[in-house]
Length: 126
Length: 490
Image 1 (cartoon, chains in turn blue, green):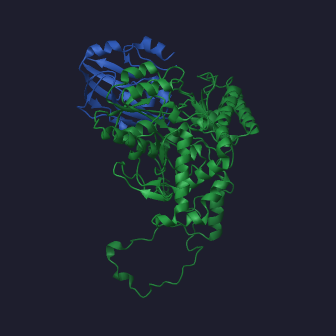
Image 2 (cartoon, chains in turn cyan, purple; image 1 turned 180 degrees about the vertical axis):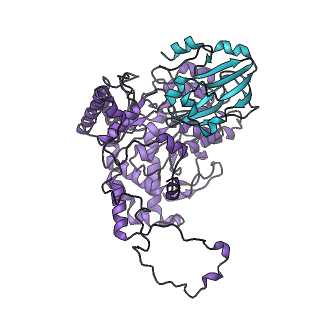
Image 3 (cartoon, one colour; image 1 turned 60 degrees about the vertical axis):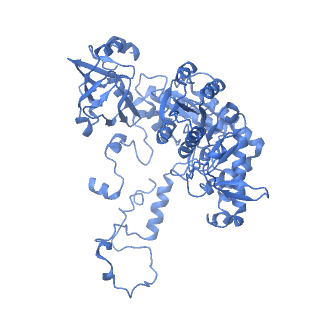
């Protein structure tokens, strides 16, 4: 059973957004890290890059596969999780604690298109 | 490892001063080595192993016994068509009259080799229902790139420079988007329906005058024939795009169905899959590219053509996209494929597809009560299970694959295609007897039983191989690829 946290927003491509003020912490769900297996590389954008909802902003590579990271929201990257550069496996340890990028949201209404915890739980069939 | 001592690394067998060679008399002894410029001199001797001949022979013979190949046992690696490579192919390609040729020899002295090349070109054109082939590209993905360059040349020749996108199904081989990206195209993904085939309704809105073409493999990567192919080709053509056929899954079509007749304009063939040339250790392969009538002039140079006097010539032409390889591709591989086609002949070549399909369906139907079959119905040459039916034990597809090694089988392809999370992709090929398939089925069923009764046994596999389960994660994070790095790591 995957860990799903209440209060977060989830996308169909298994990214989540945790919102604090106008900042969104974006990472991959526990379900996604589990399906990917051991993550060996996280490809991240740079600070000040623009990301758009539904567009790719990086990739996670595991021993099984490489998967694009699709941004659930639009905005400007204000911080990247540099710890993942040296230790990508942190994503497997706790994918919610170890977010990938922090984005300043440009359109908070986009959040309404995402799933809440309950809907995401149903989406992954758990 | 058959012999623990000789199975060590050759460097570990090294003893100072030991040697297994004698050098010829030094003819340069009169020169003073000090006269050489200092920056060209080595500062220290190279770290070469010092071993006697017998040690070398035993070391490498032991190593070779740990290889697993199609000559050793069943190799059901889906998507790769690991068919048997008949030994007559080797015999033909090693004929001194061919191996002794030089690519810069005068054309009049290599008419025999050019005849082989020309005949294979025309055979492939007939088999695939297209107009002309080039055998120059070195492998499948190189063929894809070449084919896409033909697509680009075609649009550019009509001054249609808006076409920057290529449509690729979400189930495609990873090489498709990679080749399209290398060729400078943007990639548009079209979704699959629950049965794994392209969703025509999802395709329609993607089609406009920015589309250069669409890449497909048929049967697709799930081994399912794309029944809507005629409609898809018509829609893409109406939008002004070209259809590209990824020949990786050509095997089940051989003699039954031709890509050209399905509406494809450009395709590549993996000679090392469908036409029984060795996969080798990453090469050499050959990836011939074929085109329909009207696109021949864009094929890469040099081309082998027959002139009005029935003499074979090597030709360069201005409209061609240029050269993609040195000379005329991997000739030894071309020779093997030609030998395979002539050995089977037209009638037997027709049996390849049906037998490959029969074998795949036999294995699928015999195992679907213990392995999860996500797409029911008749498959072509390969099929995909989504792991074990009983997932409660936590035994994964990786564990099943590792356990197969204990029983002396090569593992199937795992975790591809990405559509199913526990994908286990099996392709038996047409070569295997019913007895071999029954043996494999029995072992797969046994592993399913082990997974329920003793899951730790399967999770800990392999138990009988020279090396146990390797740490994939560590290998990806901190690869050690040389002896020097290994010595350092220890």
